[in-house]
Amino acid sequence: MVTKPTYEELEERVRALEKTVGEMERISPSSEHEETGSALLTLLADEWDQAGPPGIVDIRQIREILGISADEMKALIGPLYAKGAVDMDRRGRTAFLTPEGYDMARASGE
Image (cartoon, rainbow, N blue to C red; front, side, top):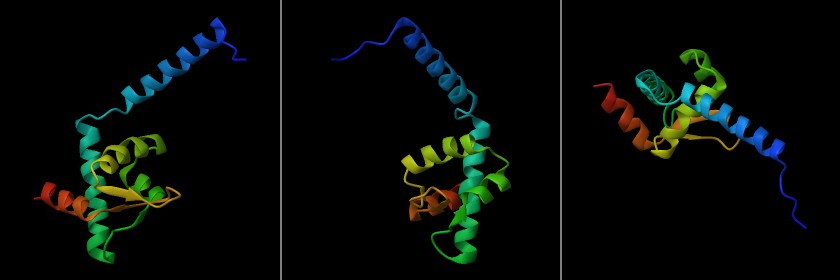
């Protein structure tokens, strides 16, 4: 038998969703967000040039260099991952460029 949530439970869920939406709006794409995305691509492309493809960098190191939080990092990588520019290891500890991402990074730097 399926039990329906109470009014209080639904109200709590709505508050949680509103909080999530507020967080997403706070870190939503903006010109600053796009600049940070370009900075991430450039950082990974520079690593690609120095150490060879695919330009693997530890997520903590990226966050430190770019001065962003873990949540901001997730919001930043998501769209780049969706575009096929950036990928991550299975555990989400490192990020690296795809060949398309390298081309994007170098095209934006021209």
